[in-house]
Every structure is written in structure tokens, then in C-alpha cells.
Image (cartoon, each protein chain N blue to C red):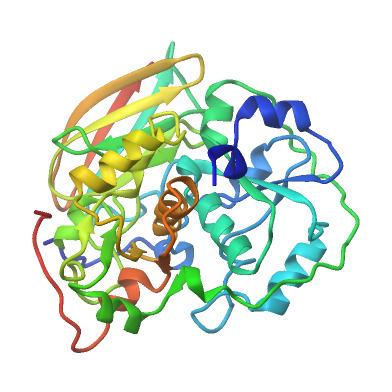
Length: 111
Length: 280
């Protein structure tokens, strides 16, 4: 199992309540396997929409609404994941990603 | 109990905006979401500031709940429509509170804020003014709330449903993947618990699956014995409130309790049994 050495500063204050876009990484990934990214449409960040994290079996694991800046952050376990975006107007996008402990996997998805 | 007693759809909400006796309440995981935009006329409840005791780890008490609803302008005979983000995760948690303190007429907006937003329906930033009421809360209905000793006594006897993600169940993560990993001292799950991630009850747009699909999910696939009482838990009792809603309110199971202490309490207790590894 993954153990945690460093927890981003906002974490204890926010408990289970992640802000839109997820809790941003402040000082690097620490002991976390981070998947973060940006959602755009025609090159412009999309601020209304949802990002779902699916495991390697395609099962839903977590979801965050997009931040105002079109960004999102997940704290996953090391391994392979699918990031799926849902946006108004029936728009969607998907991307595969590998997460590693101590690293931030950065993605950009266009809908 | 039928679906229409506990759920409304977005069209119903759109048609009843502003009806006297109907109060929309938004409850979000992201407590700032309401401020950026909400359904017209909706008031906000902050799941943490408003519903949790600021000092002890417990809920607001009966007087605190009554004060909160009075301040929000909610009366005992109002129809309360709850909605929120993340497939109504926190709205379902609030629903459970309303039932815990005896509110009769409360429903969820099926699909919650996500479906409303993805359908590009109107949102406003204007905060409604509602006159203060004199709300009377009942004593907690402990038929729907489980405590740690209930959970230990239920091992191998009752249905235990762990509604966290498979990685949390197995002990590989201590929190959902969109949150930093923190809190419980040990990873794993309560022995004999079945792992049915809460989100399996919802479709991608956030609405609940059909009763038949839900019965198949918890019964045939997970192996829950519908003839037995059930305790649902997660990490801090919110996701399991969503599953409590499914089992108790949608499927009409008689004795279903939500263990709000959940894994952050159980995984920090000294001496209780813990099982590691994936579900069987």
C-alpha cells in the first residue's frame, strides 16, 4: 500500500471537501502519485465540466468538477488510469495515463 | 416507497422553481461551488461548517440542526429538494441528516448539480432571502445510524457494505483518489464486508440506475443477503450515506444503517480485526 510522507497544505483543512478542480499540488508531488491536467476547447480552458478517474478495469474511482482555469488534480495509486472528461453539450474526451509515486503526470485534454 | 417519493428530476425542479412550500438546498463537496452559481432560489448548506460539530467529532445536535434550518427559512412542512455535485454525494449525506432529525418531506434531484450543468440549465449567483422560521427537529432516529460497536458485532453476522473504491478497500489508498492520502492509522476493510463502490449505483450523468440494476448490483453481483440487516460505511460517512439512500430509500430495505464514523474511526481503533486485499 502507499504510505504518505507529505500531504499538501490545504488537505487537513479541507477534510473530504475538494474544491473545484481538485486540491492543487503546491510543493511537488511528495509521496503522492498525482495525475493533473487541463481541459480545453479550441485552445481555451473549459471551466464547466467534470473529470472522472477510471481504473484499469474501466471502473469509476473519483470525479472532480473542473476548476475555473480548466484544471484538475487527482491523488491516485501508482498504476494505469483513464481520465474521462464530460462537458456541456454532450462533449467528452478520454486519455490513458500512468501514475507513479513521487511524480505528477500532466495531461491536456481537448473536448 | 417508490422513486417519486424520494427523487425528482430536473424538469420537475424547473417547473416548481419558486413554488411556496418547496425549498431547494445545494450541498456540495466543494463548498464554494454554490457561490459561483446555483439553481435559482436555492439556499446553501455547508456539509462541514453547518452539519458538523466544530469541536467534537460528531454532528450538530438537535438544537443545532433546528437553528440551521430556521436560519435557512425551512419549515417542518416544507418539501426540501437537495442537490449537489459529485453524483449527489454530499446531498445524499444531507438527506440522511434530514431523515435522522425527522424531516418528513425531503427528496433528491436525480443527477444533482452535474446533470443540471451538463444540460446547460440556468444557474444564478443571486442568494435568495427567506424569512426565518421556527424549525423543530426530532431526536436522532438511531434506526439509521450505526456506531463502532454495532460494526464490530456485525462482522460475519449482518451485511457490511464498504462503499469505498477498490484501492481503499484493499488498503492501497487511505482516501479517495481526488484527495490527498491522509487520516486513518491503518488501511484495509472490516472483515466480511463486501466492496460495492458507491458510485456504481449512479450512471455517468449522476442519475441513479434502475431498481432492477441496483438489485442485481448489490444482490447477485456483491452477494448481499437482502433478508439481513445492513450497515454501510466509507471513509467519513458521506459516500455511505449515498448507498444508504439507495438501499433504504430506493430499494426499500427495512434495516439499513450508515456508520458515519466509517474508516477514519474504524481504521484507527486499537484491537479491532482488519482484513487486507481485494474483494472476493
